[in-house]
Length: 376
Image (cartoon, rainbow, N blue to C red; front, top):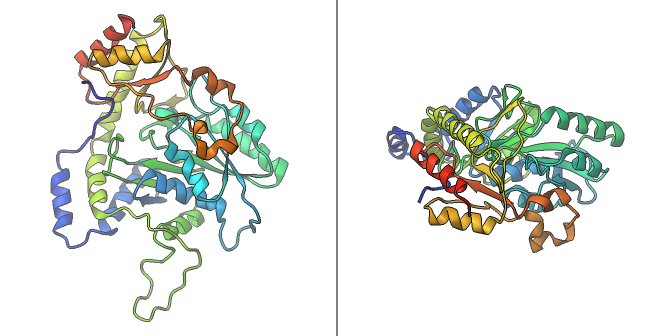
């Protein structure tokens, strides 16, 4: 079976992990600090807060909307967070975990990213935050999003927090610049099957020192790790969580950073092959992509006729495919947030994802194309 995803490990990861295991320090320490610095250098933003998973990173990020801080405005009632339902559940459940309400923005059926027109129409005085997902590594139009948020601030006197879910988007760029450097709070996942993996982990990239310092503390119970532990004369101004990445994860991340560009390049090569070979095929529709952004293609999306038959045909040919996750608005835990979403309705039963990763051989991808072309 040609897999939809696969774990990527650098050849020297064993040596790095072995060094950590024999160091006597496994918790968050100097290896993680080195990893955070290396990630920051790659992105061009040093404000990197590593965490133990991407969902924890989103929880931390959204805590900035739920708990603005000791000097922030008083919150007397729960606010809303605008988000997309076409994503993994890990994007949206941190909204609920922070005591906030989710309000669904529709999906652009051409790109599968959030419909920015619908998002702008739904911003209200109750909007605390906006979560956008760079789905499968295709960047949202960030300049247009910034203009929308500017208008919302001018209208309501408060600027919603913007959180970019970059879980699938390591290596993606918007107008030539890596995600994580466009002025928003950005959350990456480095889970087992992500292109850059730490085994299990993630990190938050912050646009300013104040929010960086606050999330760095909230990541570890609100305690400054260098505080006085002899007299106990330290204070926790903002309580936090225990979302730290350990030294083993830091070692894995450092090793994998050395070859991740090569992997992303291979994903793009395979996607370009599909772009050409599947274009105009009856029963298959490809997504639209703008020239000003370079996706990372964590997976390759298609909109197909008779999705169950399509997926059975691929399975019978030894090719894995998936819907990845159920549309989040269909879950009963968010039934009170149901909304009319015609864009999502038009594609929800047609979207499917096929392998595009670094592990595909030329024979693999040719077999995938020939299988699809043969019909289902």
